[in-house]
Length: 420
Image 1 (cartoon, rainbow, N blue to C red):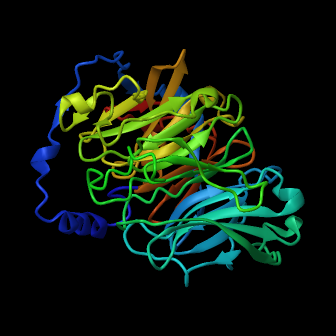
Image 2: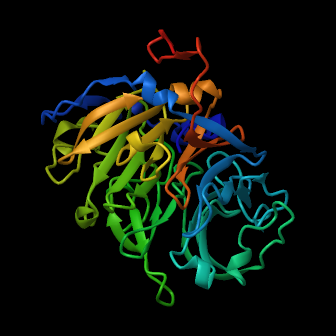
């Protein structure tokens, strides 16, 4: 979530680097050529008109994530506020009382806070859910919780009583050497394990070498088997700078990872679930599609997995993942991956074939129409429909649009106006 939540993290990182010369990290092209990416083009205006973002609620707690248990009503779920609270989101809006309040336990500076939430696949019967936050020492903590009566889970809104929540166990605590690059996302994979994304520990250019260190959990995608007592973290994939965030396609199981770049390139990774274990995405020796960080000899490793998409900082500065759309409300998006950027608030749509991006479309007019800014998450509800969060407090959902009135116009991303 680099450079996304506050400028404080940037300034502190530069101070921590001190006299460290950035000249040692000059980016140079990598010799190994990658397949050329398709040109990004504006999405079809007619398709864009058939959907819109609908404001559901406004939060004052800096929303950063959303999750919904299997079986929940469309649009309902829990909102993760960076300030330390979980709140119900429903058709009536945002719960006026939190489901869980960890504000006294979380560190809230820079990129720290309550960052991740995942419901157990059987939450509606056993009430288990999981959070990821940074504690007062700045370290990452994954905690297991349980709702006493799961049928009361969506409390605090429309007069519904709050559920009774109890802390079950601290599953994992990982020391964070700096305040940024905490990752924080949680998601259950197709294998039933809980996956946790960790950044490289922070500062800049991974000065402690965590991402390529197999003895460190930082810069990694980690799995926990929550069905056993005291689960041990299993390293699944490495070479990540700051995954914000990752998702599993609910139909294919494919894993998408949006990894925030250093100061030139943002990247999106995609691999099948069957080939996820053991992947090395290359940071901090390489970023993007073959851009070496430092000596070329250190980055020309055939074991590194290149991202399927990249974009330079002329287009944005901090990638925000992302959902593989499997809902029903916007049919043309099915099977495509949607992601955004914190700084420029675009929304791009990728279509894959045979492991490569074959089509890339810009659907940013959806965001421009509601003046969405500082996008922190694209998430999905239980039905696979898209939920969009902005750090400024906006909570939107993507819904079918009524036919525009005659003479209405839509602003295209290339600056042209398209008549209806």
